Structure formats: C-alpha cells, structure tokens
Amino acid sequence: MKKFFETIITVAATNLRSVILVAGFVVISAAGSVDASARQGVMPEEGKLAIEMDPFDFSMFTRGRMVGKASLTLTLVVIEQRDSEVIRLRLPQIRFDFLGALTILSRQRFNVNKPINPDIVTAYLTPFLAARIGAGKANIFVKHALITPTKS
Image (cartoon, rainbow, N blue to C red; front, side, top):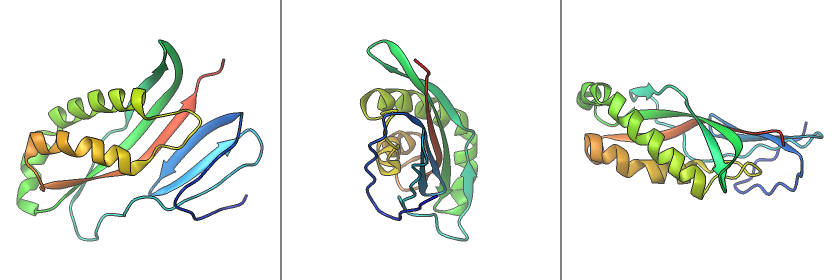
C-alpha cells in the first residue's frame, strides 16, 4: 500500500469503490491496489471541548438516479466552555439544519469518484451553525467522510 501526503489528490480510477476521510486523512480505495492519503484541514486544539455528532447518512442522487450513499461524522469544538450547554441543547436543531444542508451540498459538490473536501463542508455548514448558536461559538471539523457508490 502506497501513501502519499499531498494537499490535492487526483485519482484516475474507473472502478472506484469507496472514498474515506478519517481524522484528517483521505484514503481512496479502488478496484486494484490504488491507495492514497493526504493531510486535509486542521485538527482541533487540545484541551477544547469537542462534541462528536452522530453520523449523517444520506443518499446521493444525480439526475434523479441514486449514485451512492454518503456518511459523514462531524465534530463541534466549543470555543468557550460556557457555551457548551447551549450547544448541547440545540444539537437536534443543528443536526436537522446540517442534514438538509449536506443533502443540498451533495447534489452540488459531491462526486462518487472524488474524495469529499472537508474545507468545503466546513465552510458550507458554518453559517447554519452560526444561525443556531451565534457566530464564533464553535468550530466544525469533519472527522469521517465516506462515499459508497451504488452498483450499476
């Protein structure tokens, strides 16, 4: 298994089976033995309260046809400890907002043949989080992202 630590990954695999982002590393598994890893995003600071959300599982559609299933696990890192209770109380509403936003984002930006860019996910979801709890109270980190194409 070969590992490459690069910022941008270009994969020319026709039989791509899964794309995984785990703890800031992208691992691309193809039909053969094509594996790659890349450092993406920034890891949360040590000592900050992190709220790990349940995985978001949703189907991906292109032109009305299901092309795959996506699963994302997000972590909210609370900036100030005093805001943690407000965030925990609003977690169901935040989850609802994120699921709707991720479904829309998947139609616009996700591709079953390419890894999910955690920076795009974070940038897209940040305004939804700010609307629920206020700006600058928490940061969003993509902990895990998986796209599994459907068999055609």
